[in-house]
Image (cartoon, rainbow, N blue to C red):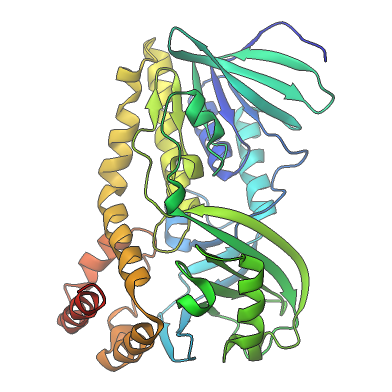
Length: 412
């Protein structure tokens, strides 16, 4: 292996996923020399996420509308099913979510980062952090051909994903294993009996313990089908959903699986500390993921921008110590902390319910008119704030009282 002399930049981003690219975009726009190291040969591959995102929050980030070829479908309806097939639907007044071609979306963000001045190095893995006197001062990298070198930086942003390998090297606590669920997603053709503007959600321990299953149709008749679970083999659980569920088995009876991917999802809420001297963690590695739905892109992008703003201010100020960088965690917590707490409680609530209670819950939601109360809602990410807004409607009070009784009965 060839060892080359140390290179120099101002900011390093570990990982070329959406969080890494968005951090790089905002750093480069601020005038910071930024280098992104991505271990794979191509941005966007392998893809681990369904790419089901909120239109409202993409717009607020300046990322919507998107270029042609990225948006695969838009949705205004969500259908929720119990293991017995009981259905509860929410019909919204206009489309609120999109499903994206994740590879093209990731490539779009990377291209924007490059256009702003960031350098992206593919086939380049970060082997370790360079730490001197407790300060992270760069990374050791290795290219596919075995060539190794060291890159010095003032701030390193870790956006490596759920593995969180480098967090430990930085002296930070990694993800909580008990908060992980393990997902499988298949791209399929020939789905049946699915409304094109509806996302299908399959709840219950019988098929997806600790999480749920999903079917997200594309406009061309294909779909993304998957689930995550905290017990058992996710591929076996998906096969059970495909063949045994009273609704999914009909929708997928003639479906042909084209591609399958696997990924871990952290539902435990943000890690205890996301910063140290010269170092910030963002995205999946920091567990900035919605505990209720497992979505990490919007919150990850939100934190990536805050990380970029914090890092650029620290670099320009000549102080990249932990004291200077701690504002990153405070800002993230101030913006997202309430929603994370609500979603953690919602996840625990759902996990506590038996399949029989879930079936009952869906029936009661229909009778209480929950769908009508949420008809004009367009916020799906900041779920704590969404619930506060919904509770201003008297029609939601009965639902809250019912959920409280349901929770108490499930947790005597």
